[in-house]
Length: 283
Image 1 (spheres, rainbow, N blue to C red):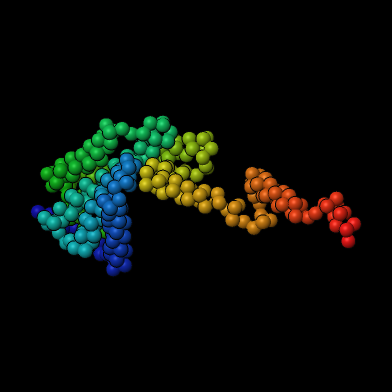
Image 2: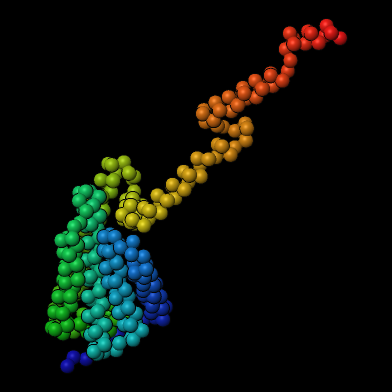
C-alpha cells in the first residue's frame, strides 16, 4: 500500500476564508429556497431553473464546509462520501449554469421559451450526468484523500491513482472549461440581440429584468397596482387645487357659467334707470 502524500499545510486564514465563503453560499441558497416555498407566485420557469442551481450550490457548499472543518489526514469513508457529494454537486452546478444561459438564449434571441420537454431534458442532463460520473468514480475507487494538494482541505480525486488527470477532468474540470467557453458565447449573442432591439447596451441589467421582473407574475402584479394607484391619486388633483391652479377645459367652462349666473342674479337686484325715474319725480 503506497504511503500517503505529504499534506499541504493550510494556514488558518485560508481555512477561515473557505468556511466563511461556504456559510455565505449556504445562507444565500437557503434564502432562495425559502422564498420559493413561501411565495408560490414566484415559482416561474426561470426561477425553477435558478432553484435547481441553488440546490446544487447548497450541496456543494455543505460538502466543502465539512471537508475543511474535518481536515482529513487519509482516505476514509467520510472522506469518500464528502468527495463524492462535492463532485456531484459541483458538476451539477456547472450544468445548471449552462442550462439557465441556454434558456435565456432561447427565450430572448429565438423567441421560443422552453417547454416542458426541454425542462425535463435539463433535469435529466444536469442531475443525471453528474450522478453517473460520481457513481463511476466511487465504484472505481477514484475518490479519496488528496492531501490538499489540489484542493483546500476537502477530498476529491485520489492522487495515487494512475489516471488521476483523466478523472480530474471528468469530475469537474472539463465541464468547468466547457462552461467558461459556452457561457460567454451565449451571453454575447443575447447582448447583440438586445442591442439591435434597442432595449439597451448592457446585458446584465436587461437579462435580470427579463428573468426576475417581466417573467415573474407577482412582480408584474405589484407593478400594475403601483401604477394604478399612482394614476388614481393624480386624477382628482386639479379639482383640489386653488382657484388659480391649472384646471381642465371642462372645469373652466363650468366655473365660467357659474360666474355668469351670479352676474345675472346681481343684475336683477339692481334697479334699472327707467325704474328709478318715477321714484325721483315723486319726491
